[in-house]
Image 1 (cartoon, rainbow, N blue to C red):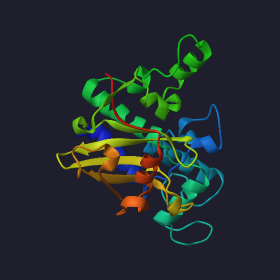
Image 2: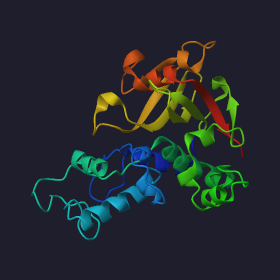
Image 3: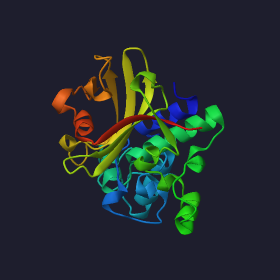
Length: 265
């Protein structure tokens, strides 16, 4: 199982701890589309749940959106429209202002808490992100480690080791490289629990079928139906979708590389 602190962060991504409203699932946001540099990690999809909330409050107050009062509490009614503030309105506000988390940021924040609590190790500082030979890049990676940990860093043998799916446990990751129709995208899933029959995972993603406002963090289950088969050959269920309707499984099948990896500590 994940550590208590890691589980708390995981739960908070699925129910962002806003003051005054519950049930806000963290949206997906990938900075690759905007290509912003030298920004706060919360503005590039790498923030914690609390950092996302604080930035939402700042933006709401700064631009008079009316969703939060000056103390940072969710208003019962929008100050401008008078309408009741609900979960979907808050999610729409977050998405419209590019606030959310991307897949590697989601995994890193949870595993950082997990290994700090269980091993007293900060994986963000331990990960090899850049070679000291490239001094500028190396310095930046040390000053801003979380912002520079991508899916490829989890696929690096300096940081993780490949394992068989039968040996997987909570805290391991599924690395998906060169997927999508053009094989240009990478993705990562976090294994949250493992039994003899099931592998449970969580990730931050955007399914095309969910449109502009439906995406975000999600959970799925891998039912072991073929013990001699690869991970992709098992039964994947997410949002009650299986087979070709499960876009996560579709991405795995399109990928050039799918590996389960364990962080080296």
